[in-house]
Image (cartoon, rainbow, N blue to C red; front, side, top):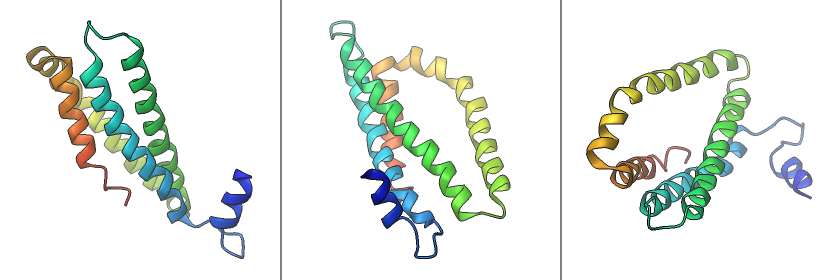
Amino acid sequence: MVLFYFRHHYHTLDGTFIPEARLPPMILGSIMVPIGMLWFAWTATPDISWASPVCASILIGCGMYLLFIQGFNYFVDNYTSMANSAIRVNRSMRSVFGDVFPLFANQMVQALGVAQTTTILGAFSAALMPVPI
């Protein structure tokens, strides 16, 4: 049933895929990530059961998966002849952020604690929520 829905609503009559059809799952993912991060931030304390932060991490993981996979699919569908270059730019930006964040992440967690640090990152991801729209 889901496959029929995707085939019917996300393809044109000649069978080509509509790139903007990738955006609704990305919007869902952009909502799931800040909710999961804030949930994790407010429950990652020793006096709260371990199950709550684990459930929040699952929500974060599902949201990131939706954003990551649908983002790549959007690049491929939208930039068909230059998809390789678009994915390379995306990978380069992820590498830059992956290289820079460890430079200050340990100091931030030690100075603010897990709860405040994750709340700041959750607020930052909430501010980026409109990007897929």
